[in-house]
Length: 139
Image 1 (cartoon, rainbow, N blue to C red):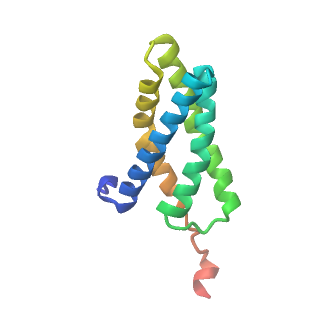
Image 2: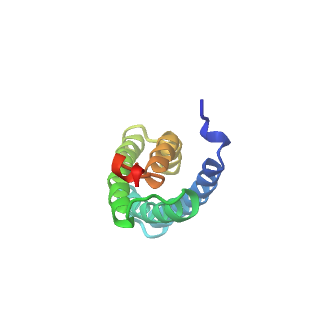
C-alpha cells in the first residue's frame, strides 16, 4: 500500500500548503478586520488568491510535468479546484453562520478536511501521462 506521507512530493505539498495557508489566513484577517469586508466576501478573494498560487506551485515546484498542454492542465485544474473551493466556501459559511465557529478556525478546519483529497487529485492531474497507443508503441 502506498502511503503519501513517505513521499517527498507530499512533504513539499504539505510545506508549501502551510505557507500558502498562513498567507491566506493573514489575507482573510486583513480583509475582514482592517478593510471591513463581509466574511463570506473576503473569503472569495482568499479562494481566488489560493487558486492561482496553488496552480503555480503544484505545476512548477511540486509535481512532475504532465504530457498535457498547459492550457488543458489549467482548464482541468480550474474544474477540479472550483469543485473543492465551492464545497469549501459552502462549508465555511455553514460553520461561521450556523455553528458560530470563529472564521479563522473555520478556515483551518476546511483546509485540514480537504487536504488529502486535493493532494491525490492534483497528483493525478499534474503528473498525467498520455499512454501510447498500440501504433505508437510499435514505431
